[in-house]
Amino acid sequence: MRYNKIRKMDIADGPGVRVSIFMQGCTFNCKNCFNPETHDFNGGKEFTQETINRVIELCNNENVEGLSILGGEPMHPKNIEGTTQLAKTFKEKFPNKNLWVWTGFLFDRDLKDKEVLKYIDVLVDGQYKDELHNPSLDWRGSENQRVIDVQKSLKNGEVTVWKEIS
Image (cartoon, rainbow, N blue to C red; front, top):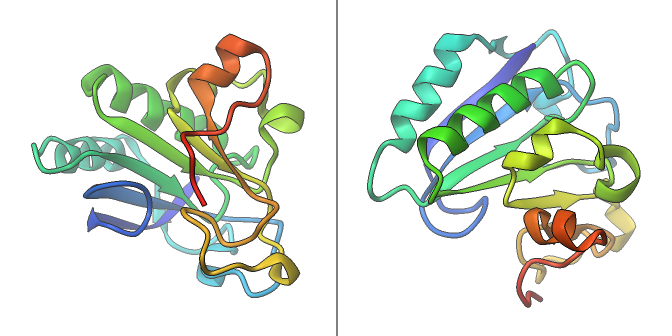
């Protein structure tokens, strides 16, 4: 597994100041993807325990509200194990900070039985669709994408939208 980059102070990918990691590799290849450099599974850098340690160290800052995991595709079968390890380590170390993940896979169709969901607070799911692009949306690029409160959804047994967003 590989990752593309780590941002130590990100204010665009989730609420507040965050640490963001962009996983490497995606097979969706959405038209006009905002991160096409993350599509090649052979690009980027090797994702190791040292990568996890570095992300956790960056999150150990009182100004950091949470961690965002994007891509590429963090939930791709080639990436989900590393994503799960990072998510679990993060939530064990910082139970009061929030974890956001972006994926082209659907929560209720593709991910409902995945361990990683135990650790995610908010999941933005669905592939970006250029014909549904809407720059006024919060936290997502196209109208088909959902911002899901994962823990409430797991508890309720149905998709529950995170707060009220535009």
